[in-house]
Image 1 (cartoon, protein in one colour):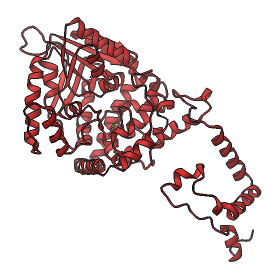
Image 2 (tube, rainbow, N blue to C red):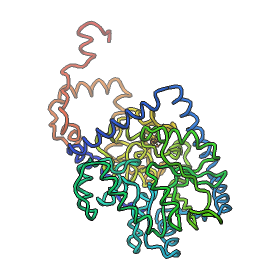
Image 3 (cartoon, rainbow, N blue to C red):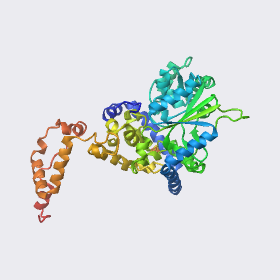
Image 4 (cartoon, rainbow, N blue to C red):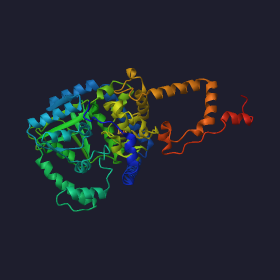
Length: 478
Ligand code: SF4
């Protein structure tokens, strides 16, 4: 079992989120802005189409050769002086990172942004062993101060407004007075973090792309914190999922354009860091040791299915969630697990199991907005439908962890009755006639109707069927 021994409660949490006007306003404002900025970036449909096709092809080509490329990456990194570690589970990855830090005598860690380390709950693991990890990405720093989890994979504190951040800083940062001036708030965080960079025994980061051809780790960011975390401390540990590999350096170019434009509507990020080795003799900066931890955590299982394997193409741009009519209304914490929004709805059930997160594929209108904006053409709605099917398949035939867990005897019986009714015109006619007679007598509080009728008016059954009306008007010869 992965580190998150949790169960999704999407319905319950969505109910709470929908009744929180401040949260809804924070998300609405932020998501409207992001959608508008992205639309400006991709104003030329031909350019979007061709760039997207290149990005998708590069990711698909890498995944098609994933086992081979991972071995090549390991060999190239090792030849470059980067020490490579493989972890099957998040627990193993945590143990590897802890072991490296303990061996180096590290007590203070500065972290660049990394969703994989969120997936591992690395900070809590290190803290339990006496090692302090400070998040240096501004959004991550804010939620770390608040003791919360990220609500968005690119902008982790998007659920908070200026006033909430001002209050938090005034309470948690020594000497900080309440201000809603964004420049002053940023300066306060920068000042607090400077000392952490200087004092850190080690830096931990994620990886956006790992290049098999050259053994290069590519990290993109806007604040410079990623570069400081990976160059200033004497030890750097990069942690990534096994799917982030690319075949060659040339493959990065379209993705470096697609990712920031899709994510924040920027033409490119302020920093593009490429790390290929520890500090070499004669170099003035950089860590003396670099480690790369490659985490599986269910990804191999996802990879084994031709259709579901497309999930691994994801470059974590968050465009799907920015455009999702569900995510934009309920926010990221509703999804319980690390990855929210459409990508979370397809990734989490596959990694954690449909028995833990089987409600998530249902939290979608299948409007296809996510698929339309995904820069690597992941067919998210098709995968959602497949996962819904896997959840109710007889478990012996299910192809996903926890498959069949959504199957209930009552529902199976209900669908069998439905099939019988639609297969026979006689039974169908009798059933619709009977429903016309007694349908309106069904109370709203009937358990099978309650989820619908608690928020909507129960529709009235017509006294006569369409066929009857047509016959009476002389439109039917039945
Ligand atoms: S699924 Fe597509 S749109 Fe969503 S985060 Fe991944 S790459 Fe971006």
